[in-house]
Length: 368
Ligand code: SMG
Ligand code: MG
Image 1 (spheres, rainbow, N blue to C red):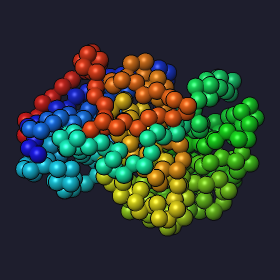
Image 2: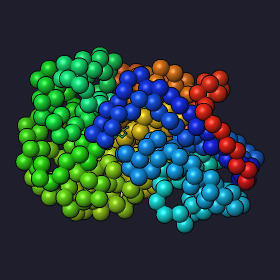
Image 3: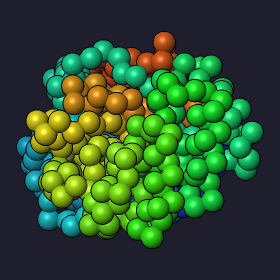
Image 4: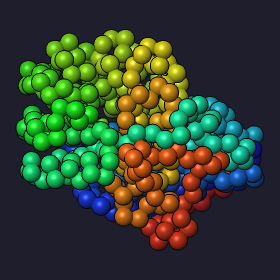
């Protein structure tokens, strides 16, 4: 496959409601899209880096810069292109996993479209629909949170994740349990807002029968997570700390987590996410697919990943209308609490041309 060029496109989408986490409030999604144009087909990748480096060190302008200056020229120089050649060509760049993942996905999508094969089939998906969970942000009050959760449960979501932070943890969790009962699959995500000194306080969550607590401590504090895990009955799950298949296996081996949130962008691509899956599955580590407020393009790829057999817990793979009034693709809709896995070639969805143009804030074309 011969690369003709790469388009870097920025798109701005307003969220249906502000999404507050322990690290800040998101009101709009400023998305960097990568389009790979080849002699055979075109492919799309979505970069999950946010506008500001609050969730992790990457941010959209930084990703665009490293793509334009280093990653795209390296991939363009690779000659005969396939996803593995693209990965190898990008390997000399340290870090920048979200930027690499976006370019890898664009190449992978083009390559699979040229071959008439779906991403789901290529990754090894074994299901044609995946159970949908929803991530519920920090609210101004418990009654407002309960209304939001009730609305999502009415829509059919099968699992609720509550964002927590110091000052917004035991009380909202207790209230959700009290209102919706002990059988509701419920978990929490702290986005690294606590320290080991909070272990006693966090043990207060044990009474609520949570599926897991996600990333309570700092990204680089694996030893702290291992110590915390010994002091909690609630299983610890890692998100921000897991940057590769190897780091997932190591984190499990040292007892820092029992469950892994898989985000392809965070580990450098869907192919590394599959390696993580293949490494963790024999260890019996439950996996689930995380979310980064993706548009329909990134969501399509996430749903394909979530259909692999090791993804045994519902993901943060929600329907389009949980995020956007108008998605970039035909909307993903909840059917009986599930999203259908796209079956068409590549990621199986395309941007809606007029919507894409309307929401685009800038475009740059980089010839190969
Ligand atoms: O895509 O539904 C989604 C968001 C899920 O909570 C979510 N993501 O730490 O897991 C996480 C956060 C990271 C993004 S917050 C803007
Ligand atoms: Mg998380």
